[in-house]
Length: 286
Image 1 (spheres, rainbow, N blue to C red):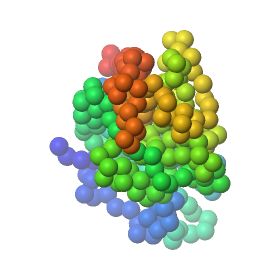
Image 2 (image 1 turned 30 degrees about the vertical axis):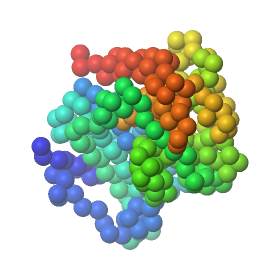
Image 3 (image 1 turned 180 degrees about the vertical axis):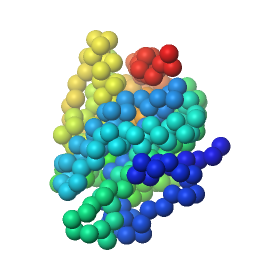
Image 4 (image 1 turned 60 degrees about the horizontal axis):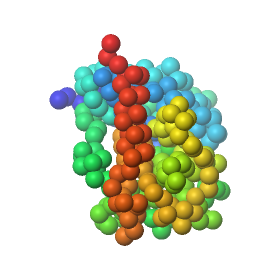
């Protein structure tokens, strides 16, 4: 399959795509990105991904803000060229070259799409293991709660998790409350109630996280955004992770500690099924 890239609105084969060595994303890590899931040739909740990226650019003080119409065009262009009904797409936006004239600033907008995006079925059937990261999330970090390309710390913690045969590393705040995973949002179930850290923890406002909360509200599942301690986490009946590629991923072990009965819980499975139903409705090929 030929791989395509959309670079500033121009579609080209991947091997032809080039970005300046003076680009701010390369030189300084100044960039934002979105990872999205494609179903039936459609990006699930594309507009919410684009809105989140633009909101982050504004909050972080970018001089030039991305234009949603341009971002949408880049993503849809490369998804269509990929010609895959099931795929994952990535949109990366930086503040452009550092060598630009003072009065001319052009963002760098890159969209890619790749076939295949699913985790192994046994992850959902049997559940996965996670670890608690030694790293901490600080409220004073200006990038906290934003999906920036300054991603090394997250990847380092993820590498440590993989070395321990886990798929994710859970981050706590400097005052010892659960924040999020290196690449995911975290939910737990206790006494048939759904709990997750609030956005002002601070955490990334996950698109899948928001969808799961919508489902819970629609189905009358008691739901609270609340501060969660390590003891709360380890005492949970069920734990699961969410992101665009994971969807709803059951966790059965935290380090050496089992979660509940050490198998995917009933509420997790219910939400996983309901999330699939939501995707099917919103990304119908009809």
